[in-house]
Image (cartoon, rainbow, N blue to C red; front, side, top):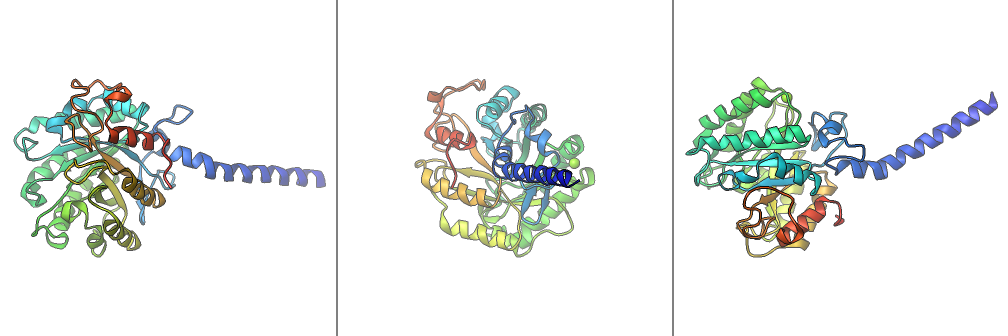
Amino acid sequence: MKKAIGSHLARSAVYALLAICALVTGCYQDTRLSVDKNGKTVVERYGRLQVKGTQLLNEAGKPVQLRGISSFALQYGAKYANETVIGWLRDDWNIQVWRAALELLDGGYIIRPALKTAVIDSVDAAIKLGIYVIVDWHVHQDANPQRYEAQAAEFFDEMSKTYGEYPNVIYEICNEPNGDDVTWDEVVKPYAEHIISVIRANDPDNIIIVGTPRWSQMVDVASANPITGYSNIMYTLHFYAGSHGESLREQARTAIKNGLPLFVTECGTSKASGGEGVYEAEFLEWASLLQENNISWVNWSLTNKGEDSGILILNADREGKGHWTENQLSQSGKFIRSILRNETKIK
Ligand code: MG
């Protein structure tokens, strides 16, 4: 009997040790892999995402951080919204999330509704590949989200009816509200409450991400008056490492302290213009804050137009075939790829 108790204790000690190892190593590896060593995709492992407090959690209730790449505005970038390219990004770049940026103006969805196909192709590819996908209503220019609220309601009604049952799908309902009159309390929040109610009528649970005023920077203001009455709502913060530093990080910390769950659906290594250099050290400062708080992030963007924030060099992969060689990648592309592949260590 004594011996049995002894061996039971020894076994318990081994299990405890294994659990600690899993927490220290396995958990880290599992958290940032598009496909794990057993061939399980991120969606197979995490399942239906949920939000508790400031944290994005997997179905089992463990905090997770997703990292990935955004399309460029789809009226220019649709050629990459296919299973081959997104699959390449999953397997070579280790992305766990793809963002389909459906821009409204500048030749976008409002005058070319057929662009919706590029969103549908993105979502179908993500479902096949077992990664998450952000359906981004890319309010960007003339950016009062209420201006196209009726179109947004119609679009998200259809998307949530079609895709609400898939754990892969995340809705982003207004990319970057901006303008002096576009306040949180009077414009963005009421808009968001309407669109959330439309989505929730079809889909009770998938994550919905809400933009914040001033190009999705005023998360601190949103945190003083968050949306209530719905679950699985997050808020977006956008940054460009060459333009936004410590003062915007301070706004993020305020929002987190106030309990606001953040998801960085767009961030770049360049200035906010998309150009004027690649700011690696400043980007790593941000990456560190995001990792420390388990905040998911998506890099802007997959484009070959030659801007500094784009991951490809000018005119690389004109046809959208993926399988890029090192010399087709821009400085930013090489840098972001090495972070996503867990080769560049985040402090
Ligand atoms: Mg659902």
